[in-house]
Amino acid sequence: MKLYEVATTPSCRRVNIFLKALGVEVERVTVDIRGGENLSETYRQMSINLKVPLLEIDANTHLCESLAICRYFDEVTPNQRYLFGQTPLEKAQVEMWNRIVEWQGLIPAFQAFRNLSGVYRDRETCVSAWGEESKKRVTEFMPLLEQQLQSQHYLAGKHLTVADISAYVLITFCEARLQLVIIGNYPRISDWYQMLQQHDAFL
Image 1 (tube, rainbow, N blue to C red):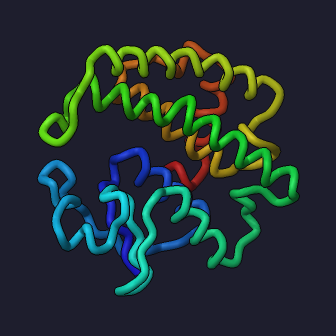
Image 2 (cartoon, rainbow, N blue to C red):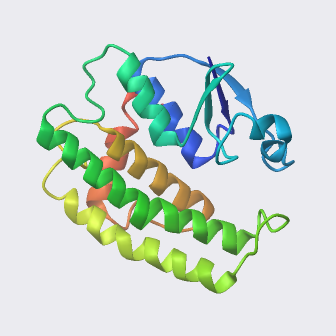
């Protein structure tokens, strides 16, 4: 089993934090995304979306999309971490908040970075105005995150879940790549973020 990745990218960080929380080790293979290795015919034979991360289960079985990879490992690894929730309600709440973080946070953040930085302008059309609008949408999402954390320590319940991991990756990416100052400006997000940094999975 191999995990094809670029360890510093948000999607790969999400999987790696999740695996660390589960206590799972897997062989890693670094992919040269900037150099277009993911566009090669060899990679096309393995990946549907031509992105990282990509999990090779065996020579004929591959999974892409970070959340799908997390779900697979959660199912095949005996554990009581309940990173996708425990009860039917918890599972629904984790799914709900993870989707909210993805659609209102991560996806706009990715669009902002790609369109404003032009990092992949050799293979996609970059629109600065869309990048600015996407960045604005990320900024407008932060008060909702702050509000949700007012009444509880974790985003989707009483313990760490994949929703927290997704939101943590979002905050880190926004500060590092979009120059958005979040830690310090949002008290509850700041407390939650610092709490997660004490967890072994985030070290």
